[in-house]
Length: 240
Ligand SMILES: [Zn+2]
Image 1 (cartoon, rainbow, N blue to C red):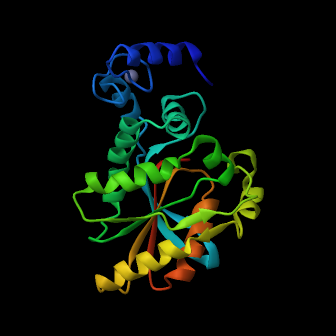
Image 2 (image 1 turned 90 degrees about the vertical axis):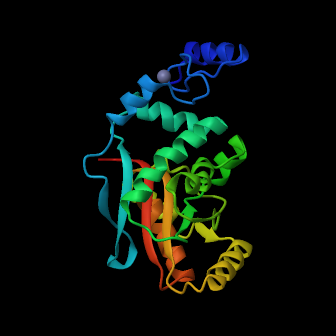
């Protein structure tokens, strides 16, 4: 999956002071993704971006995504792979701009809260950032609406990497493995109170949704903290 030739080309071209495309390594000037790769990405857009996602307690939440994700080795994989492994400000801006589309499909009111699915502790330690947090917190600048970003959730230590597990084990793996950061909860509660919001709209943000197990776990934790909230999910990509 890893293309070293492309990575070397990218490193060389970045060193020559022009930005290269994170997907094809061709010259992209100030952009993270060149126009032809962006066009290829746009061909991967979902025909039906909004769907119902089953969460705990027989509940369903509305889930909006931009791209379909159904195979390895395609341009979508490359994008997700890049933002997981590299801290690139322009790439996160690009992802944030794209993430503003699924957000807009949900017709959210002002002061909707965006909360990212937290990255597991192992990968956070390895890469030093949380890719969903990075584009989720930037997304509000592209939505034309006042959104509140909150890094409310944490993944408890010992949770295995989801992609290595099958569907049933994914559910077991996340169960009880996502918790709330007390300080962030106090901060968010104060903020909502100051805005006189008792029924907050909350969107759970992730880079990719496969089984929805992580979303379901986040939903249940958020639901406990904010029982009256309207909860949604949004992602860059989703299994079609
Ligand atoms: Zn390109």
